[in-house]
Length: 418
Ligand SMILES: Nc1ncnc2c1ncn2[C@@H]1O[C@H](COP(=O)(O)OP(=O)(O)OP(=O)(O)O)[C@@H](O)[C@H]1O
Ligand SMILES: [Mg+2]
Image (cartoon, rainbow, N blue to C red):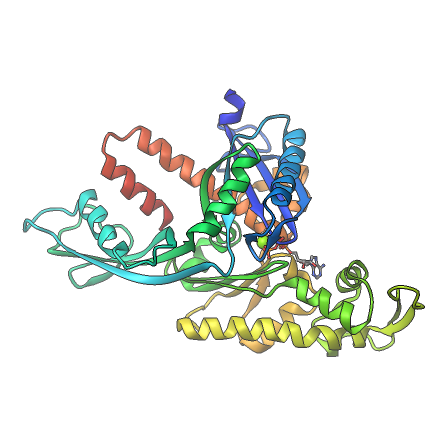
């Protein structure tokens, strides 16, 4: 039982895979330990079933996938999972920025945690449709009188306190279905976390968040985007396009099966036609009784490039619409399995006119490489980020336990997110 409590578990219920990561929280200075004391001890990956673009379409099938992935992770870790941090994403997620203002009632006194709580309450007081719920309120900056760009206003003097926040909402039913699937798998939900926010925890450096960067997670069924600037989340959006579309395009274009198309994409695919090798010819199995055919790599690229361009153009439109085309100084960080398509980085750099890199998880030190090297792949950024998010929450909770002020708890949660 004691061992269970010391684990932080991330559960990424993706469109193509369901992934569970168990990390042990260790103190002290033993070898193989991370600075934050997290060590991955169990990883389980199962094929995702019963989900479509982040929403449950078959509860039984989804529960089976979750159970399979959790069981695999538990077997590897030699412990039982109880509570998980679950990723949430899909077209049902919407987000917007809001501002809250509150006067500091008595003149010449320090801003305290109650003022911060009150100002955040005013920022969240927006009219929401009855079928929507708030899943994140992420403070971007505080403003004391006319001084903006303040990360932590506690202890400052002022007469008026303002806050800019990013609010993420979800359809209540879609979120509830995910929670139900997790509960039916015999697990408790510690928190639901927007997937790109979790991925950002794992792959973006503090400098990138400060300078301005765009995180683009290209999964199987969707592309998640989060824009960071001055250390805070400025914009998030989920686009229902992902790597599965490339596979479908190949299957249709080359008249082959989905598994064959998937294999071709990974092994021979290239997002830029000019990078493809014209002389490279490979055999493609036909469907049914059709004979295999010889196909040049450039033909495959001609199929992939328009789809890759479509995704990058959508990303560019989102960056423009949010007004961060010139402010994302650190550029774009790609993650998710779809980002591994050869030539995608080059194509994105060309269209976006920004530096682009593939992001892999940090924060787990050498132990990650030794025990679970596959976690360094971009498709695992969300699950590692969920664990890091959970760890941050745990530390905040410890702070709560030591604090006798309810308001202090509330503030510490938001401050930790800043
Ligand atoms: N080497 C590769 N080249 C091209 N595509 C790849 C490669 N490896 C994986 N993919 C694609 O990545 C996608 C899966 O990515 P990922 O595991 O991040 O998705 P997911 O988290 O399950 O889905 P989502 O985030 O959309 O819910 C699949 O479409 C797969 O074909
Ligand atoms: Mg994903």
